[in-house]
Image (cartoon, rainbow, N blue to C red; front, side, top):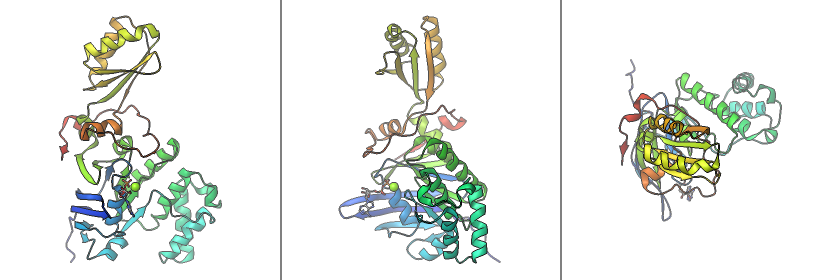
Length: 343
Ligand SMILES: Nc1ncnc2c1ncn2[C@@H]1O[C@H](COP(=O)(O)OP(=O)(O)O)[C@@H](O)[C@H]1O
Ligand SMILES: [Mg+2]
């Protein structure tokens, strides 16, 4: 009789990786339970990929301990590799082959008979909205299609744990939403997902818990709601109808909701940093009472930049990366007021 295991999906203690003088991962402790989506959020160069590569046993840690699905990365790398899947920021597809040919090739490499590989390949293309593109060469795919095909390729065998390294960086919003749906489906099928991202919005939409990392260290850990609650509740963007009214609006907001107000380059626009989301209603009624006509009034969540600024006192370095995803309006859950752990 086999003993039921309650091993966490991932457990690390003091994980370290150096590249020459550069300590890319500087003592990372993670405890990720099975099921659900765990996010690792951090700017470019924070050490996210290096952590993933150590957990996937592609890179040997220089210090610390790590267990993946109960197995030691030093002692049992082969066992770990059998149970996990990894997709990278840069897809590992053959550009000259078609979508289905790529999946059949991967299936054959996994030891499937040709017919089984083909059947499974078509099922996955169907599931990922790529059926029509099955016979098209991958070099003619869009970035979003490639990303989906890459994830499909890692699902020929349902893994217990999948590492998705920046699955949506650099793809358009529509493909991003499709990838998000795929990720949610994976969890439904019982796979644990470890996702890295540069986007707070992505972590917020997908992750049950997340670790924020910067310069190879975990600087905060908790639910997305807990982390957002630490940085205030985001920004209120107001556009007045008459530019002449903006100054009065700015002073009013600063006074009534004690927000830090920024005047935007657009002469009708201003942004107020809110300490609490509930202050937004007070802000709107203050403007109404002062008879200031408002064109738009939008409440956005804090950006990754704001999270970083709040947690570290410095801005995230973007190293020429594209801007973070647009701040959509999202509602804070009931856990927003709880404390996240700051390290
Ligand atoms: N193979 C490597 N050789 C040398 N330096 C590396 C290598 N991989 C990553 N680094 C460095 O380690 C740090 C963390 O990189 P990485 O894990 O790729 O960050 P992220 O995935 O968060 O963008 C960076 O300073 C990067 O330049
Ligand atoms: Mg990376």
